[in-house]
Length: 244
Image 1 (cartoon, helix red, strand yellow):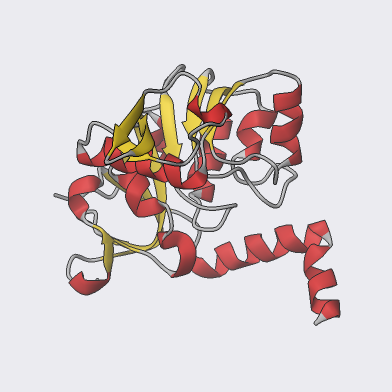
Image 2 (image 1 turned 180 degrees about the vertical axis):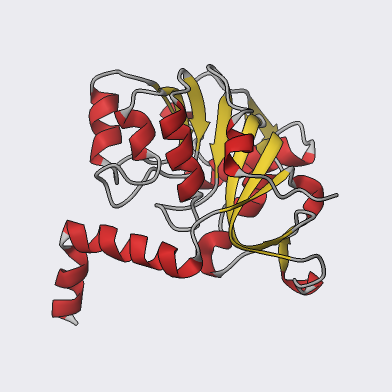
């Protein structure tokens, strides 16, 4: 089955009020081209999920969705890296649901692999425990964290073949493979689309069974330039170079 689609075809699956999950970590390994298209689509009242918010700020990565006021609810572990998202949160422009980072990823894993939940000691006797079931196993207390799934997931790979196998590069492997399994329709944005068989099976990070569509994102050199430009605009990259 050829799963390669034009990004415009994928955007036809969007609708108001849906839940969308995103791979990536602070913009690294994030489906930047798809996020831009979602922002342009005007779809609203979204529930979005990502392990952390965007960085650097100023309309980058997920921040543009908050600037456009397209988000109704955000499920994440941290928002402190994005001034836009922090400002929107302070103005109560969206509902915020926070989980410890390891708990967030395990809730997604449960959603992807059909598990009823995960027991974790993280958050016992803290505000995290509010509204959750507490269980004791072998004399130790745990919180029951229930699964998270989404209508759509957007992940970012280095290469993808025409049947949907995805290869990752570097730290983009952090959350993308888990996110890929936890949605009804998963879109893999990749730097390069190759023919079936060109990806060594031992390097496949997400098997095709989890992927519904493969779309062409920015080429790798384009992606590098985008990231470099963003960090240069913050002034932080030049500061780090000077200190070294």
